[in-house]
Amino acid sequence: MSVNKVILVGNLGKDPELRYTPSGAAVCTFSLATSERFKNKQGEQQERTEWHNIVVWAGLAEVCGKYLTKGKQIYVEGRIQNRSYDDRDGNKRYISEVVVSEMQMLGRVGGEQGGYGGGQPSGYASQPAYQPDPKPAASSPQADSFAEPAFNPEDDIPF
Image (tube, rainbow, N blue to C red; front, side):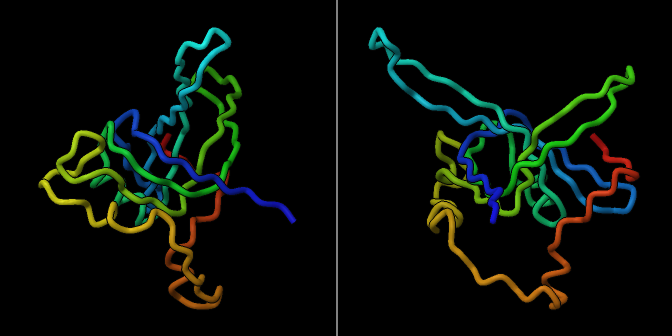
């Protein structure tokens, strides 16, 4: 048995980029910053920030493109994916990404930390960040409509 699961809570480093593949699938990309605070050997407070490349597909990609902006705090759940591509100069490049399956907007509406305007708590913030739901059966049409498109290296990925 193996598990590839990532859970992150952080702030967007830039506005999301929403694009569409030639076959019409929505894909949204952005960077997410997570920070940890610790004391070094001298007892001084330090902060370390990690940057994560985030990829979201299908309907959730369109939600991210419409509602997320730089600085907003979100919760994401997904899996790590490594891939390679050739840059404009023909050099092979490698990238690690978090392919998101679930996203929750956090923070208070209109608040300082990742707020979403309006002065009332966000509907997302009032719910637990993670609620396990039973997965629909693989044969149901609903399951197919939310499945991530199969990766085909022949497709032009727009980033």
